[in-house]
Each structure stands twice: as C-alpha cells, then as structure tokens.
Amino acid sequence: MKNKQILHDMFYPKQFSKKRYVIHKLTDRFTTFGYQQVETPVFEDYDLYNDVQGTVDTADMLKLVDSSGKVLVLRPDATIPISRYYTNLQEEAISSRLAYVLDIFRSTTEERSRTQAGVELFGERAPEADAELIALAVTSLKELEIPSFKLEIGHATFYKELLREANLTAMQQKQLDQYIQSKNVSEIVPFLKDLGLDATLIEKLRKIPMLYGDADFVIHEAENIISTDRMREELNYLSKVYQLLQDYQVDSYISINLGLINHMNYYSGIIFQGFAEGLGQPIMMGGRYDYLSRSFHRETPAIGFAFEVDLLVQLLTCTLTEQEILRLDYASSERKRAIQLAESLRAANLAVIIHTPKKEKAYTESPELLVNADRLVYSKQQESKEFKTDQEFLDWYIRKDVE
Image (cartoon, rainbow, N blue to C red):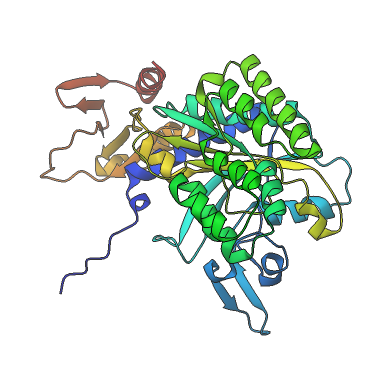
C-alpha cells in the first residue's frame, strides 16, 4: 500500500528558503529594538513545567526518561526556561532584552513541533514598555508584508477580578471561558444564574465578551464593569498604552478585546494576539507576566511575545529571488584551474557546482561555464559570452550578480 504520510512542508528547499527569510527578517527587526538572541536546551526537566502553575498542560508535553530515571520533556514553551535563566543570572550586565528562535514541542499538534520567534523584556513595567513591544510586533509583520493582519489587545485583570468575585470551581471557570471565547452571550446568563451569582456580577460577566473593537468605545464601555481599584488602575494603564500606540502610528492595526483569554494563566496584565485574514488561528501571542519569576524565587516584571514562524511562511506573499547556481564544466586538462575558479566565485558568496563535461547534457535553465585551455564560454538559455582570462570572467560575473 502506498505510504500516505504527508511530508513536512519545510522538507522542500523553496519552502525552507521562505522560512529562513522570515526568521532573518524577524531577528533583524528584533536587533534594531535592542534584543539579543539566546537559546535554551531542547530537553528540560519535567519539574520545571510541572511546578509552575498556569503553564503548559502536562498531558500535552512530549516526555522521555533518561538513563538515570529522570523524567525530561522536549521544550514545550520558551518563556518559562528563558525567565528561569534570566532570574537566576548573577551577572548584572546581562541584557534585559532577549530574543529567540526555537522549536516548541507539543503532543497535541499534528506536526509535534513548530518554530517560534519571539522576544522577552525583563525588568520594566510601564505603558511605554508594553507599547514599544506591541509596536515591534506590528512593524515586524509590516516588514514581512503579511496581508490584512490585526493585533487584538486584551487585559487579564478585568476577567480575573470578576472571576475572583464569582468564586467558581475549575470546571465552572473552564465552561465560562469557552462561552466568553466563542462570544456565546446567550448561554452565559442562564449558566451563571444556575450558579446563583449576584445579578450585578452576572451582568458584568455578560458584557466581557462584547467589549471588543474600537479602542475608544471599549475603554469607555469598560467603565461599566469596574468594581475594584485595581480594575480602575489597569483600565487607565490600558488607555495609556493605546495612546502610545497612536504615537507609534500603528493604532490602525490594533483592536481592543477584553474577552481575550490566553490559555497560559501566568499572564498578569496586558495580553495580545495577532490574526491574519484567511487563517483561523493566531499568528502570534504575547502578554505581560510579572509574577512568573516568583516560581524562581525572585520577582521580576516581564513582557514578551512569540510569532508562529511556520504560519507566517504560509502567509508570505512576496516572491523570493532564488540564488543562481552556476554549473562549471571543464576539460580534463583544466581541472585544477576550474577548482580555483570555483573557489574564487564561492569567496564572493556565489553558488557553483563543478562537473566534468558529458557528451550528452540535459537541458537546464541554469547558467553554465565551460573552462577550456584557450577560453571560457558562459551560456544561459539564449545568452552566450566568451572570456579570454579567468579574471575577465570573474569581474563580469560578480558585477553582474551585484547589478
């Protein structure tokens, strides 16, 4: 029976070149905002994720046991190990702006792994820091020319404060989360009434999924659900972040969604997700996680995000120019000369494949250079040129590539 297993798209060179292009663009943009790239181990202790509440479900982790009997997991998340390493560092001079490109492994995904590119900013908790990070995400997507994308900005505090008042069980909260995420307003009220909650609290929870869209509208309407000083403080914080995003001139890419719920419960403030037209899943996720570092015995405010690189590759609309590969054929007496000529071209970052000439050559659109004792003959489809010396050819071909 024919094997129907689908090969990973990145197996194909053209697709991988797109992935490399996306990573290059993102990391270059991260660098211009002062982020320095780091890497974490592929294998991590199972306890790192099991002991930190509100992270990846342990059932979704890919586990293995080493020779000593210790349970390890393939890295299911980048933020947690980076946060741990940063909070445990003794060096004061280390940058608080860290970037990464890492493979993430989960048992629930069809491919089992996916590549994320993201940043983490430690030590700052201010609207200016949040706005700059969101602006970085927007400018990165603009540079990749991702079509029709939007960033939805929410805030973990509003929903969490109302949940604290409701005092729901874990199962009840999970059900309510589903109603809010799907904006199933018709089910929310009867569900909460059956739990015997106060009518005022039910009305506030009912409004949460409807608080999305234009920033001015959402911030104004959110006044009606404020019941604590903390909610008031965070609403003012969110308003300041949006004003700063207007200064960055990226507000046209932003909408506010106070019904946004992230599956990572360690988020403590602003949260955001990026969506693109024609794709039903987020292309990026992020938020503020000021209290995650408490699990590592030190409190450090932090915010970060991660792009789903493989999804961005699917959305890439620009046409990449493939590097031309020169086929270099030589007469048997010119082998050493051909090798030296190829090395000169490679030193100029040009691609060359050396071949001994065959009597019958298959047609190819790639350029060819025939090295004879008295001349060099360059040909590409209908184009043909002759050169008397190696240097004459090198000067022309390298200049041609630059042009």
